[in-house]
Image (cartoon, rainbow, N blue to C red; front, top):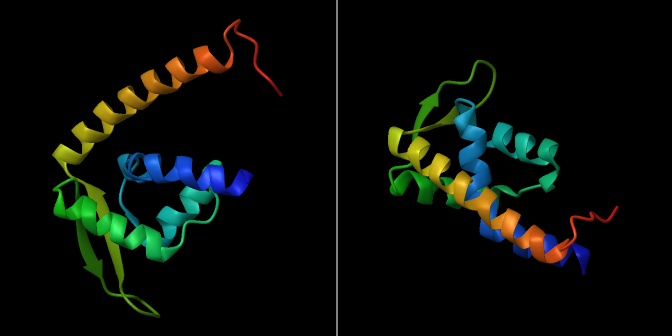
Length: 114
């Protein structure tokens, strides 16, 4: 049940998390999944990530460019657009506010469970 719950929560915030990774700079798909995994979000499959990146690009939040591979296939690098950076900052603020409101219900007396 814990994995199902995590997956549901992640569906609602994965776009924001990917924008957050790209707010730090330009990354290719596998590097994005590595950053998300290092952040504790678990393994994000390419079948989830690449359609999400395509939607972000179609929305004008992300741009991409192909680079030739030195010893293997080329890589597609993704970068935030100016609009993507603005959207990320706005959504990050909204998310922070939302999680603070949820925390007041979960920990009404300021007590955090371990």
